[in-house]
Image (tube, rainbow, N blue to C red; front, side):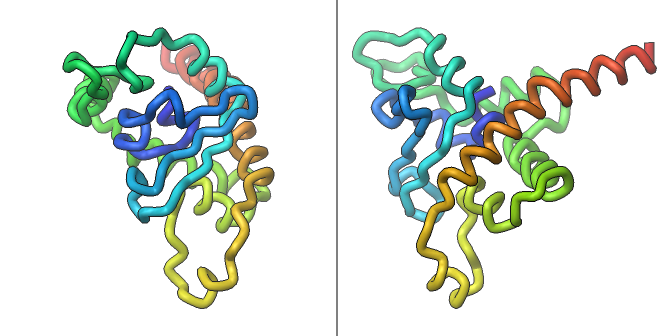
Length: 167
């Protein structure tokens, strides 16, 4: 659920350490060394993401949000893959990220650049990248809360209506 709410990649979620989170300010700072582009990524946390993180139990001497079976290690990438396979055939983390992008571009007024920043995409155009110095954090915070609200209300309402139709 954290992966979906934050539109993050598998390794970003599974290797998340508790010290990366400032729950009082609803921020997750993913260090550069764990990011695909090698640049620190600040993720604005939605209300539901903060609530989820506060509810997760901790294991003494294990810094990971999602501790694995081995001492002081996170869950493996395979654990995410197996969980998704158990949920439904064809589910992928990339599919969740793609769904986030489709939703944002099709149903919100946020510009593509804000969505790309939320997904930690690298700006391919060198000129645009050179001029893009800000991080639009407050705009991304609005986007992530809207995504959360969509997931927890609109999408669930749609699912319930669909299930009634096919019943």
